Each structure stands twice: as structure tokens, then as C-alpha cells.
Image: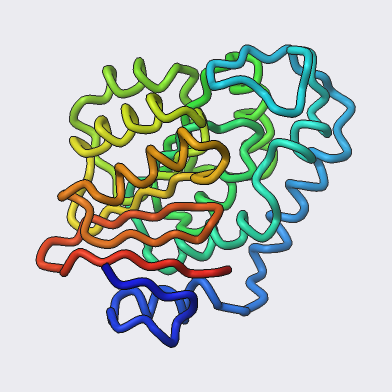
Length: 246
């Protein structure tokens, strides 16, 4: 498998264009101001949520009583990655988007603004968090995203025939759950579908899950950005793996 640390060693036209026109795009998009405003409103919030954690547990919080501002600061997607998520959606223009792990919607608003005509579904297991975020996104005038209050397994069981062009997975950080999510999403992929896995080097089990996914025969292109792992399903494309430093 081919490996590269920047765009100069990438010989795949598809990946080269993705890296140069999306990953390394330095355009100051006006939507960045909307992303920053949403983040600031969360950081300025005085509200406290009583969170039900269905994932692998928090590395930051000792209690289920969590200030919104602290969640946004310590557990939300960072500004650089949020902008990259926006650019990926804008570049690829997916019609149906899924996010597993809504939290406060920092990723959701990036997904929604990237393509305002896309149908964005985001899944959050904690009812309190889901309610707060749904209202926050409405106040931000994001009209193309729907927050589903459900654990991932229930969401999948209720939407057996729904397919997605792009999926951002930032909910559970365990090997078992990550591989289960991947298996479920195999039945919901289309030609060209992109799956984005967060925190692939968070712990040894997540790294094992990522490596197992990369070697699956269904995956044609995989990209390791050290924080995210991206996999594409593109028929007719030679199986290749890239390491791109961002």
C-alpha cells in the first residue's frame, strides 16, 4: 500500500485533488464566522447539563453534572478540525450525512453549513444533551440537521434502508463499538461514501480497530491524518493507503 506524508508523494488523482483542494485549502470561508460564533455561544453559556454517557466514559469529567462551556472547551471538536469537516462536506457535496455522537453540535453545524441542501442526521444518546443541542442549532438557524435521541444500535435498527454519502463517527471510542459501527455502515454505504473515524490513536484498542478497518476488502482508499481516519468506498479504484500530515 502506498504511503505519503504530504501531497507531493500522492499519485492517486482523486486523493491528490482531495489533499490540495480540500485538506490544504486556505480560503477564508465566510461560514467560518458562523462556526466561531456558535462555538463562542457555547463557551459563554452558564447552563449545566446532567449527562447520560453511553460511550466509553469521559476522560475529562468526573461527574455527570457538566457545564456546557466546559464540554465545549474540553470535549468538543477543535476549531481546526471543525473547519476541515466543513471543507470536506463543501468539497464532496454529500446529499445524505450522518454524525454518530452529536454532543453540543460543533461537528453538526460544520456538516450542515458545508452543504445547506444536504440532509444531516446526527445521533445523540443522552436526552438532555440532545434537547439542548437541538435548540441551540435552531437558534443558529441551521435548518438542515435533525438530532435523533437514541443509542447508535437503536438508530440503525430504526433506519435499516437509509444510506449515507458521508458519516462522521465521534461517539464511542472503543474497539468493539467502532467495529460494530463500521459493520452497520457497510449496509448503508453508496458509491463514493466517506467514513470519518475520530481519535484513531486514542488508545491501543482504537488503533487496532482502525487497522482492521483499513484492511477490510470493501475499503478502496484509506487516509490516516493521525487524528482522523478516513475510508472511501470507490469501485474500480486500486486499494491504497495514505498517511497525510495536517
